[in-house]
Amino acid sequence: MIIKLATFLLPILYALVLWRFSIWRLRRELDERSVPLREPRLESVIGQMANTLALPEIPVNLYEVAEVNGLAAPDGRIFLTRGMIEAFRADQISAAEIASVIAHELGHVALGHTRRRMIDFTGHSVIRLALASVLGRILPGVGAHLAGFLSSLLAARLSRRDEYAADAWATALLIKAGIGADGQKSLLAKLEQPAANRAGPAAWLMSHPRAGERIAAIEANERRWRPGEPTAPTV
Ligand SMILES: [Zn+2]
Picture 1 (cartoon, rainbow, N blue to C red):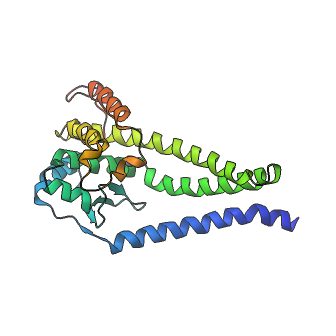
Picture 2 (cartoon, protein in one colour; picture 1 turned 45 degrees about the vertical axis):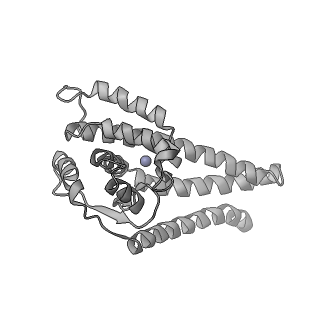
Picture 3 (cartoon, rainbow, N blue to C red; picture 1 turned 45 degrees about the horizontal axis):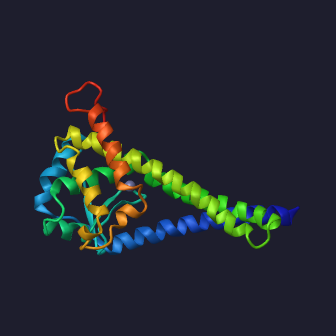
């Protein structure tokens, strides 16, 4: 009985330790390699979004990696990578396009994705380990691989849904702030073209659904949320 209980509890305990460790490691990495972003040419678009959200300011951090990426940490902080800021300084990316990345990451924070993703991560590990122990007994050898595949499939589905939700939240904010969603669409199109990625690989897109599908979803929301229309959502 005790052994049975241990084989059930140990994977859960392992997943919890892994979860705490990954949060700690991520926070340390971000603390060590980032500084507050000071970019005078971005102040006006960031200020417009802060006004719309009735916030005194939206703090944005500069993360010292070459990739072109934006991210929201589990604690809610927003980061833009050095690669993205370099592309902006080289006029490869506009202020409205940068604003759309900040808005998208704010969407992940506002909708609770950054917190839930860490919970998803634990859930994912627990599901994988539980499936592996069950399937491993039925199908020795392939059971563990099958468990990994099934749990990754589940995690991928969850993340696609979050991306569309964060995009929609960003579109609403960008329209209300008077910036508009053109930058959001043009950046997606730009990052999908390999030629435009001179500043580094578009890591931002790798965990995200295809650009064409996302642009179509943004356009559908734009038609519904034209400025001044009563159906425009509250952000
Ligand atoms: Zn995202």
